[in-house]
Amino acid sequence: MTTIIVGAGASGLACAIRLKQNNPDCDVIILERLSQPGRKILATGNGRCNLSNENAEHCKEVLDFFRGLGLVTRTDSEGRVYPYSNQASTVLEILLDECEKLGVEIITDCKAERISDDLCITTDSGIYFADNVVIATGGKAQKQLGSDGSGYALLEMLGHSITPVVPSLVQLTSPSKYPRALKGHRAKCNMSILFDGVKKCEEYGEVLFTDYGLSGIVTMNLSEAVSRNFAKEDPKKCIAELDLVPDMSEEELEKYVEKFGSLNGILGAKLCEIIKTQAQGDKTKFAKYAKHWRLIINGTKGFDFAQVCCGGAKASEFDDFKSKLVEGLYACGEVLDSQFECGGYNLNFAWYSGICVADKISKKN
Image 1 (cartoon, rainbow, N blue to C red):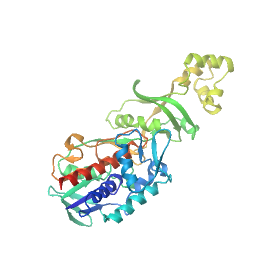
Image 2 (tube, one colour):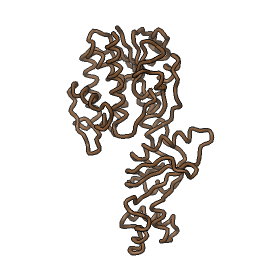
Image 3 (cartoon, rainbow, N blue to C red):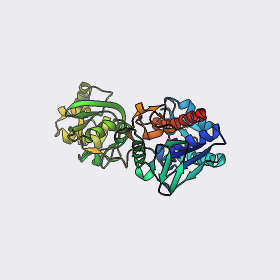
Image 4 (spheres, rainbow, N blue to C red):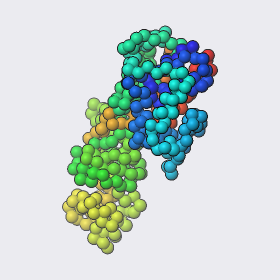
């Protein structure tokens, strides 16, 4: 039995290892278009590899898989799981070492161009035949790390539908000069996204001001709605509204300003000066702007900066990652229309889906 996995990212490597663990005699080949497998893994968690979250579904299965490879992990106060070394390279090294030990063949600089119904894969460096094919190419986020969207085309060749794909978990851009003036400043606040004045979504957490607009976990988690808006032919006017002091009411802030003359003791001088400018020096408006600070949003940083993308292969056409349309075809990871919030949830899904596909193939044969 030969299984070919297209893509040597998180889901592809996990799938290959589990397959060989389940059935050492099977042939497992990974086709990777880049010269180095697992490049996106190295970039996750700011180079630390936030490989799961203790609150994620199937976290236990994922951590059991890694413990079986000898990886020791640590968990932070928000449930995010990292390798004990705090280095993403540790995770990738363990995965590649296990592939070598088990006899997984990884062919790099090999791009899959076509797949036929009989699972014949045409690549730019030859033709391959398989009993099972697993599409683990990732989505379109961060093309330079391997995800170029080619997996969508391969699945479409085989009759699968692809839902609209947009950047997600991505920074937001603003033409306003204020984020640039606050570059590097972080604020714990409540952030809302408004389209034509109507609130679409909101979340509490840390916002990071940058020279192009807004970043931080809250921004990332709200970015899907912004991406979908600007993907439309006629997008609505988009505003990010920040409640910079969610722990105090507007009335309480007004009393504070009356007593101390400014909000310096709450917001700090730099941010307070901007609020003062917007309020045109009118102290009666300080509290209003602090609770309803609005910034125009004109887009996102796009696929090249997105952690993941939303959309992909339609879930209804798969039965637990097994194609309902083509016998022997499977898909796992980000190429599927299954995306989650920041904090290790997406990488957890990548590992788990790869493991699940391997178990399904093993039961079939």
